[in-house]
Amino acid sequence: MKNRSFPSTIDQTLIEKGDSMRESMAKVKRLVVKIGTSSLIYPNGKVNLSGIDELAYVLTDLHNRGLEVILVTSGAIGVGLNKLQLLERPQKIPEQQAVAAVGQTELMTIYTQRFEAYSQKTAQVLLTRDIVEFPKSRNNVVNTLNQLLAMDILPIINENDTVAVDELDHLTKFGDNDQLSAIVTELVAADLLIMLSDINGFYSDDPSKNSQAILYSHVSKITDELLKEAGGTSSAFGTGGMRSKLKAAQRVLDTSSKMVLANGKRPKIIFDILAGKEIGTLFEEMEENDND
Ligand code: ADP
Image (cartoon, rainbow, N blue to C red; front, top):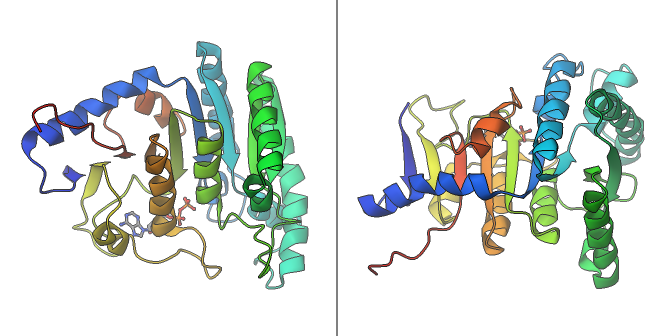
């Protein structure tokens, strides 16, 4: 399957410039990695221990190389369902919050064990959107994250599902962890967000429905045309899906950072991404062409 850059009308010099952008990966110092439920939980509902172990190994190794690393993780409800031996996600919000509360501690136990195996200290940070919107609280979040990084501790962030319910006059929900990871990237001024999903990157159409879909290697601008290609949301709750990843990419581009969307099946892919290999979709603004 051939890769291409978008906008596709740009001239060859810009495409080449886009490709050579992967060289900037070598300069990444502060990194946010977001992992989705599909990379943490097997389709049968059980926990993907080898995936989590590989993620802990990769992130610890990057930290040992001198990078500052933050993990944004989904999966609390998935792990909670497994722990409580429930076959289906409950319908009522308090029930979902209870399952998430069970799953969050279980998920952190698994992460702590796996990171411990590589001698990496971790911390749990649970956020709600109102905190990030309120300047004083936002400052506290930034200070905490910076302090953790300065202490060589790897923050593991998730939404605080017990608190985060949308109310008309009080916005507490990030929407989904795609937005949360983009907001964290902005908060800590990270150089790169790597978003690990169940798909190789962003395609010209949903590959599960269209086998002719083409993988974009580089996107410099989120256009209405691209949003249409991303389809709708992936869940009945109106969260996730490719559209949400593009919205997150837009936020990252707005703050002059960059994002790579790639497949989280094998977290070692992060090494290749940082080595500048053309993997997944890079969302990064084009630098102005000197000849313009
Ligand atoms: P995750 O839970 O791993 O974050 P999501 O389900 O939220 O993943 O989003 C990824 C899904 O988006 C893919 O599995 C794919 O079916 C769907 N999708 C829709 N449109 C596209 C597109 N244009 N390119 C890639 N994936 C798409």
